[in-house]
Length: 415
Image (tube, rainbow, N blue to C red; front, side, top):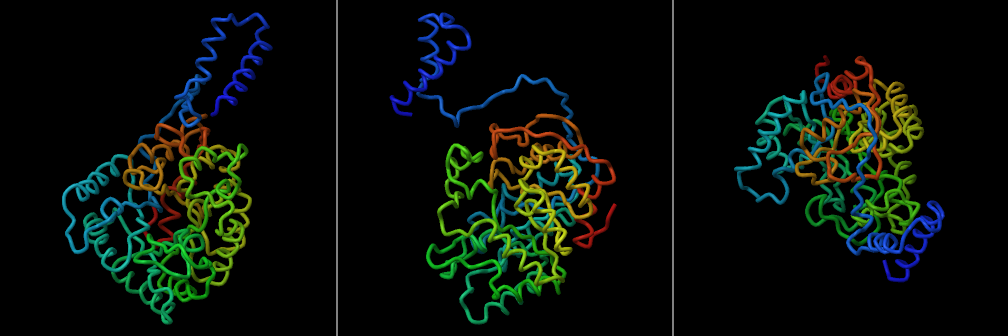
């Protein structure tokens, strides 16, 4: 803040104080002290950490009422970030996975679905050091290999790769927002994590991927699809954007004014793919990437019976509209699943640490009617300066969300 704006702010604040308290309410000494506090150089909006004096009931839920299947995690990131090719897994990563299993028992987490299990050798590592190490506790999906996108035989090859991934042990296909938002016709240097920055963006409903969607249905492998972000990331970076502080920390996800298509266009392309492949099941991640607009998600679910949703990384938006969120879950009680987007050490975002406290925030929201509590165990609210309210689901619906809806979609035993 420059000096002129500081002086204007000071005049505004002192003027408001005088109007509220009386023109003689502030002594010269008090005004000087107030000015010192207002203009201190080390106080920024990003430092704002309010602590509410509101007294409300607190009912933390340390253990889920029913066994939980988390349909959206990235557990294998504990050892696949910059892995050494051909090297065996040793030391801390394996110990961390073992530790995760120990507290899964404590919080009643039955199973985690790892979405980004890789392909080829990376998928083998995921199976060996995570899935097979703890049978029944973890399963994994595979991801596309975009490196060969421009090869003439890519469509058929990628479909065949999915069949090979299933033989390796993969249970589903994860499609990230790379497709539609980052993948360009120039392709990738190595994996989906290394996009080139030239050429037009590849569209979600590009027909080169149609054999892949068809193969997923034939192989009975659900497609876990994430194709956009929250609405605020497409809006101007100004005082009206409620994601202003988040975008200040992560300007790379501000798509306004870029060549990334509008969110509505991305969703329309996704919906065309879903409609064209009625025999393939699509799991719409992050409540269809539209938790701020449950009316829209309702329309998508009603139009496409081959879809379900999971609630990962959406607690902040769902929790601030408890009445609407509960009505939504009641209406689609057979098609809403538990998910968190949990990653080790918060690799994706601070609200998704792979630690018990993060899962317990979801339990509290689903099981209690508590008011005005934090949606994340992080020191600051990572997705908006607000708190959430519990929805207190009845046991019959809670059991479906926690376990049975996922078990039915994946072909596992229900409880």
